[in-house]
Picture (cartoon, rainbow, N blue to C red):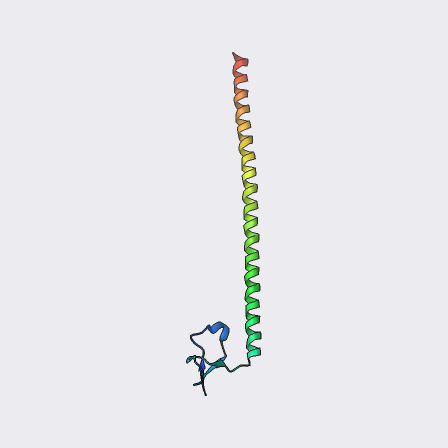
Amino acid sequence: METVEICSLNDDILRGFRLRRTGMSKNTEVDCYTSPPGKLWRFFARSRNRWKAKSAEANKLCKLQQNQIRAVEKSRAKWRAAAEEREQTIADLKRELADLKKRGTA
C-alpha cells in the first residue's frame, strides 16, 4: 500500500491527511483517506460551518456599513438642501435691504 501526500487537492482543507492507492478502485488517483470517515466528516463539517459563520459575519458587517453610508448620504443631502435654502433666503433679504436703503436716501 502506497501513501501519497495531497498536493493537487485543496491543501488548506485536506492538509495532513494521507491518501492511498489501490489497484481495485476505478479512480486511479485516489482511492480513500486513511483517516476514519467519521473523523473526516466532522472535520469537513466543522470547517464548512466556520467558513459559513465567517462569511455571514462579513456579509452582516458589509450590510451594516452600506446602511450607515446610505443614512449619512441622506442626512447630508437634507442638511445641504436646508443650507442652500437658508443661503437663498439670506441673499433675498440682503437684496431687499439694499432696495430699502436706496428708497430711503432717494
